[in-house]
Image: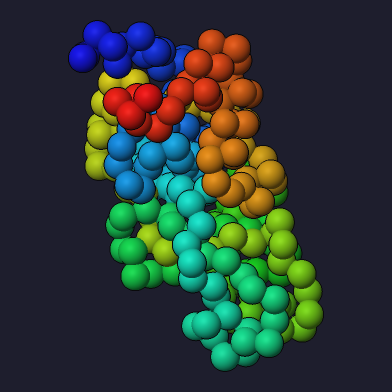
Amino acid sequence: MAAYNNIFKIKHNNPLPAKGSLLISEPFLQNAYFQRSVVLLIEHNADGSMGFVLNKKTNLIINDFFPEFENLSDIPIYLGGPVSSNRLFFIHTLEEVIPDSIKITDGLYFDGNFDKLKQYIVNGNSIKGKVKFFLGYSGWTKGQLGFEIKEDSWMVSRSANSNIMLADGELFWKRSLEVLGNQFKAWINFPKDPHLN
């Protein structure tokens, strides 16, 4: 059976993970958080890594937690990862609006003054494509992510851009793989569970 699973095994690509890069899960990864996921790394250094799963929307909306948002259009919450899963995080493109933001890459930021963000939303400004909320985050201890990449659990992409703000579902995972080249077409079309095929 191991030989069967290796038919579609593709060695990890060359880019090293860095702040602002994307981690794209290999298609056989069965972890509930990371199956067919794309993770934005917001921090990566010698001590470890931190990121958010971009394409796993929950059934929760921000509006249910903040009374001032209850009459606004639904604002979805995504499953950022298994660490601190009861805490809300956000990424955004609104550095000029949200003080104390932490730069991830050009035009993309993490965290900041939440009261200013709430005020911006309540004032009627659309945040579609500008702000994304997460419950929890994905974390790796020192050396852990490098090991997982060498084990071919993740492909690394440097193509993070504003499109990630609208990322949702397995389609985003497929499109992220397409950017990496033709050798990943087999991954895109392979079933989630090859044993059921």
